[in-house]
Figure 1 (cartoon, one colour):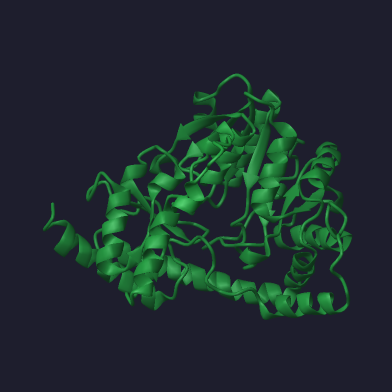
Figure 2 (cartoon, one colour):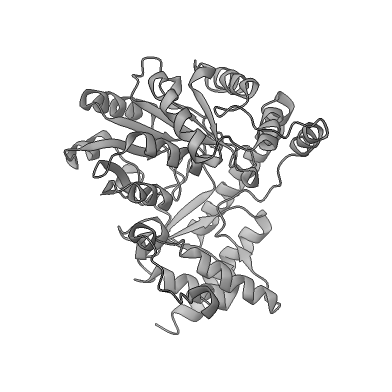
Length: 405
C-alpha cells in the first residue's frame, strides 16, 4: 500500500467489521504476475475464476439496440417483467421446473443477490452454516451483518460438500440458514438431488432456510444440469441464487438473480430499493437476448469446450503423478491436494509463478481446513496452455522444489 493510500492525518476511524474483512489473497499473486508480464515474462493464468470467452456477440447487439432506442432508464426494482418471465420459461425448458416469475428478483450480480438475501434474513448473532472450503465472500457477507459462521470441514469423503449427516453432526442452536453450492467453487463437485431434498426436508423441520448457490449450473459434465427447483415438493425454506456470469458468460455485466418464496419478495423488494434501486438496465436487455435458443446453443458449445478442458487437465495431472482427490463434475476448477509436496500452498504458488509463469490460487482464499495443502486450478484457458502448464508444474516439482527441499 502506498503512503498516499495509508495516510490518515485526522486518524479518522474505519469500522471494525470492515477491518476484519479478509481480502482475496490471490489478488496479491495476480498483481505480482502482472508485474512479471510487464517485464516480458510469459504467464499462464489459471487463477482467474471467470470464463475466458467474451460475452456473446448477440448480447452486444441487443444491448446496443436497447441503448439506441433509449432503454437506459431504471427498471422496476424486481427487474424487467419480460426478463423475469423469460427466466421462468428458462427454468421450465432447461430444468423442467415450475418457477413463477413473481418469485424471481434480478440483482447486481450474484454477490448483490447474496448480500440482499442475507440482509433480509440474518439478525446479529444468527448462525449460518457453510462448508470449508467454500467461496470466501459467503463468509464475509455473514460477518458484515454481524452473523456467526458455523464452518464445517469437508474433504473428498463427501466430495467437499455438506451432507445431511454432516449438518446434523455440526448442528448448533440459532442456525438461521445453511448455504451450499452445486457445482461448487473451488472444487467443482455436485450435491445429488436426493441429498439436497433430504437436507431441505431436515431444515424445513427446523424452520431454517436452505440457500443454494447455483451460479455454475449449466456448466455440468457427463450428466444433465439440475436445479433444486426441479424437485416438486420443496417447501418455502429453499432459496436459490444464480447469475448470468458463468454459464452465460456475462461476468462483467454484473447481473444475477434470486428465486425466493413469495413471502420474502416484498422484503427483498423493499431492501433492494434502498441498497441499489435496480440492476443494470443494459445488462438486463443483454440477458433477455442470451436466453434465446440460438444463444443457448452457442453456450452449449462453450460448455462442451470446458468439459474437454476438464477431462484433459484432470487426466494430465493424474498422469503427472499429482493428487486430484475428486474429479470435478461442473464449474471450471480442479482442487489439487499438494500435501505430499508442501505444507505451505501459498508459498508453493508464489515460487511456481516466479519460476515457471504458471499462476494458481492457494487454498487459503477458500477457508482454513487444510487450506495450506490445497490449490485451485481454473481451466479457463485453451488446452495448449493447460498442457504447457502441467509440463511446467512437473518440471518445477522435479527440478526446483526437490533441489530446494
